[in-house]
Amino acid sequence: MSRIGKLPVKIPSGVTVTVSDHTVVVTSGKSELSRNLNPQMRVSVKDGAVVVERPSESKLHRSLHGLTRTLVWNMIEGVSKGYEKQLELVGVGYRASRQGEALVLNVGYSHPVRYPVPKGITIDVPEPTRINIKGASKEEVGQVAAEVRKIRPPEPYKGKGILYRGERIRRKAGKTGKTATGATK
Image 1 (tube, rainbow, N blue to C red):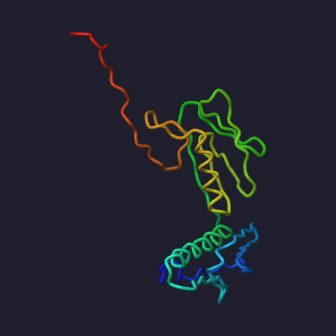
Image 2 (image 1 turned 135 degrees about the horizontal axis):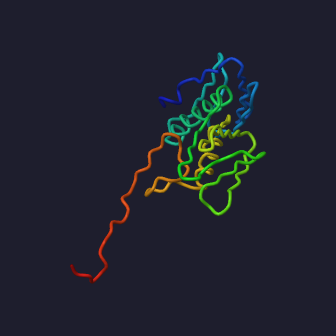
Image 3 (image 1 turned 60 degrees about the horizontal axis):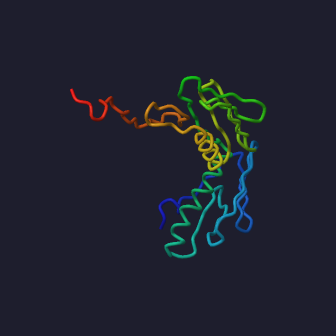
């Protein structure tokens, strides 16, 4: 039995979960998430909790069991509390700002980079060197954070770039000074 899959997912107050066919819809006052799950998994709502059951002990069903339960748990957690990723800009002159529905980044290129904010995601810029990405879907928040980070990934020599908050970059030693080839002392 899957250690994760067998655990029921408790539904907090203010959150409703509906299961029809193989679509799970989780709603709260703030947001709504829906997802199509694998048709082989049986998902049901019993006694204020979501229960995921598998039809057999095959390797495929065992792997889908824990995955399906975790996906449902992430949806419930997302609509009740939400998810957040924090990014930091490290570098001289690196800064971020919000302009309308876009995030504008000045990260060492000859032009500012505009990143349009997707629907369902909120991006806050409390300081010019910090970016907070919030949303109900764990996957979307992580994807947006990865796309923003990809604009200027951290480099290992000076450590400049867009980093996740608390991320440590392994630094490399630069080239050392060397006498010209063929020169003698």
